[in-house]
Image (cartoon, rainbow, N blue to C red; front, top):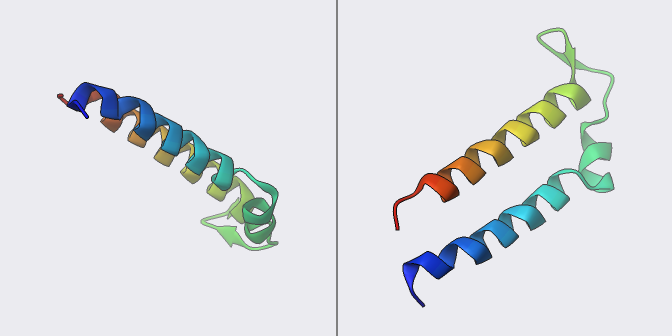
Length: 65
Protein backbone atom coordinates (compact mmCIF):
# COMPACT_ATOMS: atom_id res chain seq x y z
CA UNK A 1 0.00 0.00 0.00
CA UNK A 2 1.52 3.35 -0.97
CA UNK A 3 2.13 5.84 1.82
CA UNK A 4 -0.30 8.39 0.37
CA UNK A 5 -3.19 5.93 0.68
CA UNK A 6 -2.54 5.35 4.40
CA UNK A 7 -4.04 8.74 5.29
CA UNK A 8 -7.64 7.66 4.58
CA UNK A 9 -7.71 4.64 6.91
CA UNK A 10 -5.99 6.66 9.63
CA UNK A 11 -8.62 9.37 9.39
CA UNK A 12 -11.38 6.75 9.53
CA UNK A 13 -9.77 5.30 12.64
CA UNK A 14 -9.56 8.78 14.12
CA UNK A 15 -13.24 9.32 13.37
CA UNK A 16 -14.07 6.08 15.20
CA UNK A 17 -11.92 7.21 18.13
CA UNK A 18 -13.89 10.46 18.19
CA UNK A 19 -17.14 8.48 18.21
CA UNK A 20 -15.81 6.52 21.18
CA UNK A 21 -14.73 9.68 23.01
CA UNK A 22 -18.17 11.27 22.66
CA UNK A 23 -20.34 8.18 23.16
CA UNK A 24 -22.62 7.77 26.16
CA UNK A 25 -20.47 5.42 28.29
CA UNK A 26 -17.43 7.69 28.16
CA UNK A 27 -19.49 10.80 28.86
CA UNK A 28 -21.20 9.05 31.77
CA UNK A 29 -17.83 8.22 33.33
CA UNK A 30 -16.76 11.86 33.05
CA UNK A 31 -20.04 13.17 34.44
CA UNK A 32 -18.99 13.65 38.07
CA UNK A 33 -19.63 16.42 40.56
CA UNK A 34 -15.90 16.97 41.05
CA UNK A 35 -13.90 19.79 39.51
CA UNK A 36 -10.45 20.12 37.98
CA UNK A 37 -8.99 23.55 38.72
CA UNK A 38 -12.51 24.87 39.20
CA UNK A 39 -13.83 23.40 35.93
CA UNK A 40 -16.38 20.56 36.08
CA UNK A 41 -14.87 17.22 35.07
CA UNK A 42 -17.32 16.76 32.18
CA UNK A 43 -16.36 20.09 30.60
CA UNK A 44 -12.66 19.38 31.10
CA UNK A 45 -13.10 15.95 29.48
CA UNK A 46 -14.99 17.36 26.50
CA UNK A 47 -12.38 20.06 25.91
CA UNK A 48 -9.46 17.63 26.30
CA UNK A 49 -11.00 15.02 23.96
CA UNK A 50 -11.74 17.71 21.38
CA UNK A 51 -8.20 19.08 21.62
CA UNK A 52 -6.67 15.60 21.31
CA UNK A 53 -8.69 14.90 18.16
CA UNK A 54 -7.64 18.21 16.60
CA UNK A 55 -3.96 17.55 17.35
CA UNK A 56 -4.18 14.05 15.90
CA UNK A 57 -5.91 15.28 12.72
CA UNK A 58 -3.26 17.97 12.30
CA UNK A 59 -0.51 15.39 12.79
CA UNK A 60 -2.00 13.02 10.23
CA UNK A 61 -2.67 15.73 7.65
CA UNK A 62 0.71 17.51 8.00
CA UNK A 63 2.80 14.37 8.12
CA UNK A 64 5.02 14.18 5.02
CA UNK A 65 4.27 11.20 2.81
